[in-house]
Length: 286
Image (cartoon, rainbow, N blue to C red; front, side, top):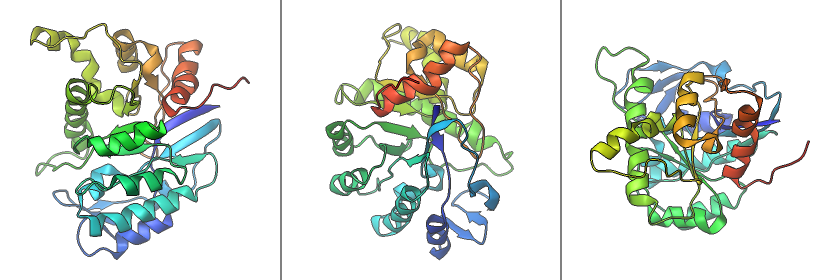
């Protein structure tokens, strides 16, 4: 039984909350309206119940590119609360990452949300690493999941542009900022970066030539997940970081979990052992 740390599923409560809004982000029927992006037709069947065969746990998260976490508190919290309520009501094997408002961080409210049984906190890569929120996670021995945030799409850009250009750039910047400025302040925090951190770990040679350091020093509490990549990228990351910090993620319903292509032992590490360590779960014997 494997773990998928990265899925999205819009429950009825969350959809209704988006439809009640009169300004972006909002849903008009199934048309998603965001600032700086053309209208997007959401496939409602993508957020129906999906096949979870073989999964011990599937963690859903708020869709950070919607920009909800950066809204003013009076706008953000109704959407976040609806997301939490709907996600926590999903049947097994679903679990959920917490979300929180980053325009005015509220550590006490985050603590109460996490204590409802959420797996940890997801934050947009575009948000600040607020020390007060990270201390709430550390106090509870829960992880942080860094996910791409909102972006503006240039006029005439192809549909794949956000996922391939700004999302990757956001993750690249968040990875380097975390290691340079955040990790020294939070040495015990477990953190996972979506989409292999935009392949930022592969730039270690360039980092060193520009005055950085640390190549060959792997942070055992800093993980990357595999969504949207395949065997070639995963193999390159494993060569740089080792297999022990790579975890399985699909980004369902937008993609499927990749086959690492590195053999049975590596697949078990990426799909089972490493995600359990990230989440603070004990290894079980089958």
